[in-house]
Image (tube, rainbow, N blue to C red; front, side):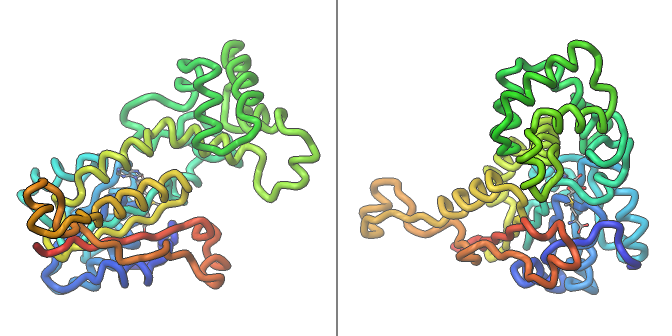
Length: 316
Ligand SMILES: C[S@@+](CC[C@H](N)C(=O)[O-])C[C@H]1O[C@@H](n2cnc3c(N)ncnc32)[C@H](O)[C@@H]1O
């Protein structure tokens, strides 16, 4: 496979956690440009297979093309990883040996102005990972109340000036002034005092754009549903690796893995009688999240905030 338009984060570390082997079946819930899938296919050659899911049809087309002959051992599904159970069932697969999620958007999505993810490129205020349906970011700004918009910007963007920004965006939307992503970025920027802008290393609209994107794509809801279903999809000894870029996502993954590892404090007999768990369902295999090395960050700025956690399903 030639150079990718999206550089996969933590490639070596992710494969070390998933330990793909020949003959294994894997599911990449966030195909993107296919970088991690390609690694899974290579490590599981000659007869391993990978089910690849993405909400973005364009990602699937791009990855298929880039994987070339390797794509013959991959099966592609246009949909969400929150429905991984249904997607696998549809392919006649009940359990897999490894699952990967590499959350967020790809560089391809960010780079395409018409997708509206970027505050640096002019495009429609869209931000849908799946442009075939659902509400755009502009429609969301128009629909929700000022308070709700402020909550979204505060919670998902960790933006301290969320109230001020929400007020401005609702006003501008009411006057039909929000005509493009650059206009939106300027409106957000105008809410941020000059001295804060000078101090910050990031673009003043970064946090608000991130928040809108997370809300438009219901990213936290999707992860929550996935965390409820993934264990049943893993074969005993199978592993799940999740790369997140947001503290809220990392916290959800950490809590879920910890919860699945809990066992009763009672002696086994008493625990069984009390209906409490004697064996863990999964054990975390990363005590702390794995982060990118300085070298990787130099080559791929996106890896700076990546956190990888993995767990293994216990063979009962
Ligand atoms: C960071 S990129 C993945 C990059 C990929 N690992 C690689 O190496 O090229 C994230 C991808 O996941 C997709 N995505 C995000 N949330 C999704 C969801 N709930 N279901 C399916 N795909 C999703 C996005 O459309 C995007 O293409």
